[in-house]
Length: 290
Ligand code: ARG
Image (cartoon, rainbow, N blue to C red; front, side, top):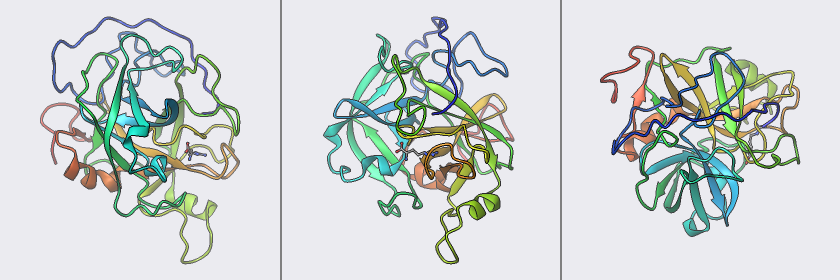
């Protein structure tokens, strides 16, 4: 991900003893940054690294103690080989994942049935079933999905995070600290025009969202795929999109394209038991289904 270097910080020892399902979308770190660019350890406790043959390959987001959501294209030609992959949770610097990180195998991968395995096509979303349930902690927490009340008008400020390249062809340097970037939502009609390929061959489908900057310079890049596009509503963070594709990285008039969770939430909910929803009407309390 381009443009966003962050300093280290300490983490409060806010362990959550034996809690099975902590509230979604609420980081537990004590030093909360307000309106700044600096990310601290455990700021995004739902982001995971998906390793292929032991190396970082894609990112994903933790939905429950047993499920991660990511991009389907991360499993191109290997959906039937879950043993090649594992999931690293609770890491901040990939080079020093730390004693409180957890690495778990993948039991199976469920790509969206409509996904066609071509880059930049619709339904680029997959659910990953972990081999065993993980233990939540202050650095491993689930994110919320948006309920049906959520709208994302253009210019809504959302964030992405990832361990991907810092520019086309340049991997994130050691110790591979998680990068974050604020990305405003781009109007879909504007984005459709930018990526126009001619009538009848829509590049931007109804289940895609665009976010970022028309002037370029800041964007997701290779290795960020599958990671979260997150928007804060009230006091909860919602997973509104999944990093999917773009033409190059951070090029002018080629913003990042995301698979929309507003479009795919019903599919996720049918499969993942216990996924938590939040919306704009209620920040807390009994909005776990709607
Ligand atoms: N497809 C890339 C990956 O596999 C990243 C996609 C995001 N690209 C972008 N320019 N926003 O990691």
